[in-house]
Length: 272
Ligand code: ACO
Image 1 (cartoon, rainbow, N blue to C red):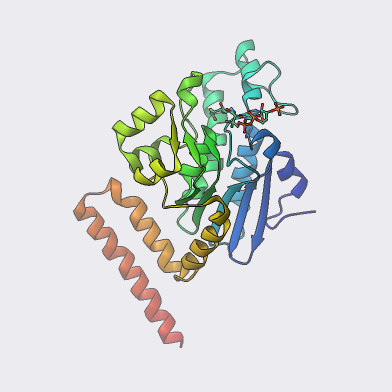
Image 2 (spheres, rainbow, N blue to C red):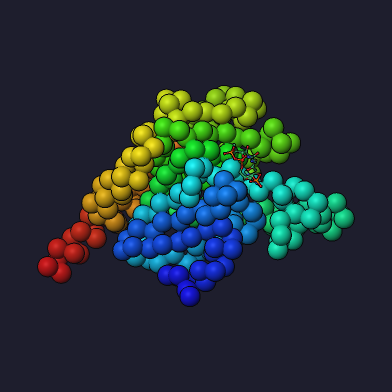
């Protein structure tokens, strides 16, 4: 059986993911609750595939975890001899000397593709986070445009405590949101951030009681859908680019975007 976008449902489920599309809204769920939604290389490849094959009609993507945790991050079996069942163990290959730097770069770039598409301007992505979002799980939430947290959410950038760096595109949004010093403090202590602190640090747009999480996300999605798609896309692109531009450059970007909008609206009015 194929999901919208031609992804075999069985392949997604085997990778720990489920995709459901209703109208303009896609929901990507992590579905290994018995492992607290730990993710493997295959999960990230499947996530990239979801992004590549997402129906053009989809405007909003909600990312959530089944069960009590959003995600416990990387499947720790990836670091153990033998790795994860059914997947080539990168650690074993490195130990054997059969994975050079270029290859590692390519493998990690492939994993990052699972996270990068969530910033695309043609969609708005919302992370619905309950319980733990650790390491790669935290980075997945950070990759989304907006984060709605249940009050039991616990965020932790655990990678440095395990001898690693966060490499799944989470460092940029973290620094953009909380600033380099706070990002350093969070990463280098690998401490856990509560939902209340996450709101203070602007890591969450909204914090609600656990029982209200789904309803709060539904309300947010409805509000996002009420804004015309083209205006939303152009505005998202404008806002995402703002931190890297000077005021002059941003003003010019606003003018370009607005000219595009006005032209499109005039053409639409002329068509009646
Ligand atoms: N990888 C593999 N298995 C995991 C992971 C994981 N990341 N997280 C949980 N599990 C497994 C546990 O081993 C346990 O398996 P078992 O039932 O066979 O014993 C099962 O999932 C349930 O986990 P518990 O620890 O019993 O659940 P609890 O709710 O008490 O704790 C928590 C959840 C806090 C997430 C805990 O499991 C944990 O700390 N996991 C590891 C987190 C981690 O270090 N992730 C890596 C971050 S770095 C990165 O992502 C790059």
